[in-house]
Image 1 (cartoon, one colour):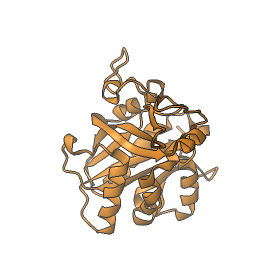
Image 2: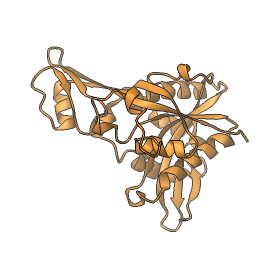
Image 3: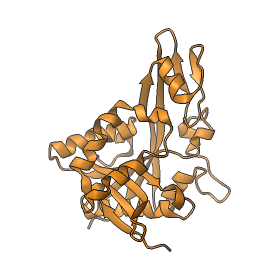
Image 4: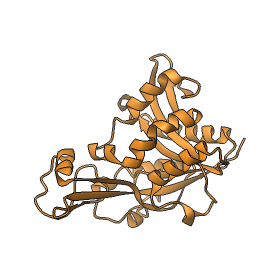
Length: 252
């Protein structure tokens, strides 16, 4: 197995720009327009650099993978995990840090593997690395609003049904959820609006390259559910669902 070093933004601040570049690389353009993410994302590097990490190939001085997480306040009940997923934990986590409140768990935000490392079993190592970082902070739970990687192929299937799909061997149908389960994660629910993107019809047509000549639901490349377009109001709205996964940790 290739030797990689777990580093955080606190330990290696010179790698933050590389973390940011890799973190923005794989997503469809419309996801760049979630206002909560855009307002708060840089704050996590300023307020919680020890939670932002990379798996560093020391020989090449490049990141094989990177990830973001942050401390949150959560009472441990699955039903208390927010429907607004990433947006909600970003708001709570940043507020928790700014108020110097006591966190009770941590939430994953994102893990990205560098293109040249895809297919080399780095994803599971990145999840374990995130769990190690959360454990260093003495927190017993890591929750993750997981973006199901194959859901975009089934945009008309509700997320609640999709996450129950299983392969013949009993493992999760979705590859990314499957990796989480293989390293000990447990599906605990759905976030129906983990991210929210709104824009004018012209903006949506520009972001997607798809003409939207009338009001209705449009299936677009990379979207997990259809985008709702209202031409009379000149607005399109996309509510991206996610799968809540819980990793129970032993605090150090």
